[in-house]
Structure formats: structure tokens, C-alpha cells
Image (tube, rainbow, N blue to C red; front, side, top):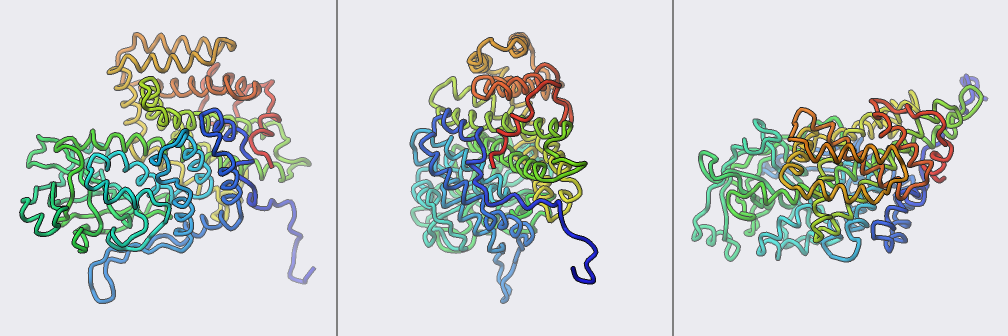
Length: 558
């Protein structure tokens, strides 16, 4: 001991790293198999090992420490609007793209959405900012397929597993990313209030500029308050095609570089200084006569973009489930090793209650997210499509809304060390609110759920069929299911209580999935703490008599 040392460092916990994230998660392994993607298990096992390495996990720290920087001009004064990233960001993006997380379902194959969902959920345990451009690229494909000429040129680059961050015309690139810009200052979620205008370019003028690609070209003037991932190769936006908005919004494809090789007139005003998601660049832009190509029919921009929205919302559920899983694993890893008052934290009854409650929430989120992904795989089946129509907004509301409190509780498990920036819990805590806000706030999701039930009688039938699969073995579940379905059968649209309805729907489906597939000590604990009584605003409220030790052993296999 040197003279300036005052104490021995002990009873501290090494970071949660160098562990296979897939092998450590029995609930995810089981969900992968039962939802139709068991063939992907070997690849996911390898991916879990790669993502759990200390070196990979440290990329997240670096990408969030050295955040994106906007360069509006080059050294000679030319307008370039380029975003500079730390090399860690590019390594994370290369991992995501290299494993097909941005586009693999569009290549076809049984269980493709489920396998991709599992990959996305694993990546969500590492770094969440890089997931944003990946999600938008993934979700853009259905919309772009409505424009065959654009799809023919762009889809091969979008489907490529080569990450190519270079700022070049698409013809010179090996891979492409797609962003989106929907909201404006005055409207936010109310996109019908958008004021950005698009005027058609005469065909002769457009062909003089762009040759064979000079069809359905518009000149766009306006702004976007949130323009995600401005470094993307193209963006989908909404704009008005008349002066008074009577014709409705149209959807446009704005490439970063025009077919003639010139930069498009998209001016990045600044990058957002966000609470979380700091590794990812979000921006404000102005369109000073930018060229855009019509996607879908004029005035039908919102329906055109809706399918894209359903896929981005699926990723909000997956991303929140992944971040919650990450918070749980860090907290449980710590609690098993940290000794207080003579024994490990994880062996102390009240801490067991908190940890087991978090474990239940995480497993239920994973089960719902993976079941929802199977709905997307089986979208040709009307019943599965209708179930997705219900569970997408309801799941996005409830799972994403449960996230911030989950992150705060996991941080508290670690204590003061979890509250400092050296801990990944601080980053996770800041990340967790974004999925509830992005792509439709909680209220928007709940109102969307109301519309689904009011417009489609089949919605209740699809939900009833899913809940019926859980049988009648648990009397509390049976009573909860019966009351929910009875209320749906007679209920008029009640906006005031829409959040309660969304919560009830998700809890019923989560309970049904756990009753069917999880060990009884998990499903009985979930029913007792979520259906028999309301889940409450904090974690650690499990009733007595539950097997917390078994729940925690299943939650993280180390």
C-alpha cells in the first residue's frame, strides 16, 4: 500500500460484459422457436456472443460520448450539410447492416420478421441510437414498392448488407439508408397541419434535368422540425400539393443527390440536442426548392406512409423491450455480486421483489414483441393482420410507456454508481422515453386503437381468438378476459379512457402468452401482480408467496 492510498477497493462489481446475450436469455430463445424462426437460433447465438463482448459494448459508450457534428460548409465555403460521426458509430452501423437488421424480411423466407425482431431486440441491449436509421430503412421498403421506377433503382442498394456511409450519388454506393421527415413546428403529430408545399415540375423541364427519371417530379419548399438521420441517402416526407390543403398530403421521395449528380436543396439548419438517443443525428431542415418524386397517389400521402408507420412502431416495441432487457441484466448482474448488510443484494427479500418484478415485465415485453413480429410474418392471414392492427398501437403505448420507470428502477438497484455517466444505466434511462414519443405519442396510439375497434368488428374477434388460446386454467385470467371482451362488445369509443383500454389489452395478451409458454412460476406471478390487481406506478409490488428465486434464475443465465 502506497503512502497516498487511503483504502482498499473491494465489494465492487465488474461490468456486465463478455457474455452471450442470446444464450443468457431463455425467454427470447423460446419465443424465437415458437414464433416460427427456430432455424435462426445458431446465427443468433453467434450474434449474441459478438454483441456481448466488452469491445462491442464499449462502442455504445464512445458513440454517445462523441456525438454527431454538423458541417454546413466545406473549407472553401461550399454548402455541404454533412454529419460527422465517431468511428464507433460506423462500427455499430456496420454490425446492424451486416446482419441484415435493416432489410432481411424483404428478402423472404419463413419466420423472417421474427428472426429479424430477435436480432433487433439483441442490438437494443447494446446501443439504441444506431437503431433509428436502420428502422427507417427497414420500414421504407413497402412504401417505395409503390413507385416501381424508384424501387428498381434503389431497392438493390437498400437490401444490400454493405454499410456505405460515403456521401455520394446512389449509383456510386454499395448500400443505402433511408430517413424520414414528417413533422413540422406548427403540427407535430397532427401532420395534416403541415405547410410544406410541392409543385409539379413540367415534364419537359424535368426530363431536361433528369432524363428518363423526370416523371412525377415536384419542387418542394418548406421545412421539417424533425428530419431523422440527415446523413441518409434519401428521405420520405409529406407535403401539400395545393395552396389550401384541400387535396390532402402527398408522399415524396427526396434523394440527397439528384440523378444528375447535384446535391438536392435540402438545408440542414441544426442538429437536435436531445435528452437521449444522442449518438444518432436528428435535425431541422428547410427545403429551398428541393426536388422530390411522388410516391403513391396525389393526396394519399398518409395512407401511403401508414404501412411504413406500422413497421416503425413494431420497432419501437422491440427497441423498448431490448433496452428494458439491458437494464434488467445490468441490475441483476450487479445485485448478484454486490454485498450489503452481510449478503448479496439479490438474496434480500425486498430486492428480490423489485428484481423479480422487473424480470416479469421484461419477459412479458419480449413475449409480446416477438408475437407481434409473427403477425407481420403472417400478414396475408386476415386474422393475423387484424391482430397486428390492434397490438401494434397498444403494444407501442404500453411497452414503451413502461420503459422509463423500468430504467429508473434498474438504476436504483445499482445505486449511486448507476446514476453517474460511467454506468450504462444513465444512457439507457435517457433512451427509454424516445420510443413512446417517436412515431406517435401514447395518446395517438391509444386513439388509433379505439379506431381499430370501432371500425372493424373483426378486431375484437381477433383479440378473442388470441386470448382463447390460453385456455381456462387460471381463474383470474378467465375473469379478466371475460370482462375485457364484454366491455369491448358494448363499449362506445371513449377517448377519455383510451389509455386504460390499451393497458388492459396488452396485459391480457401478455398474460395469455405467459400462461401458454412460460413456466408456471412466471405466469402465476404475472397474473397475480398485473391482472388480479393493477400493476401500479412502481416496481417491487409483487404479492407474497411467489418463487422469486426461480424467476431471477430464469431472467439471466450467467
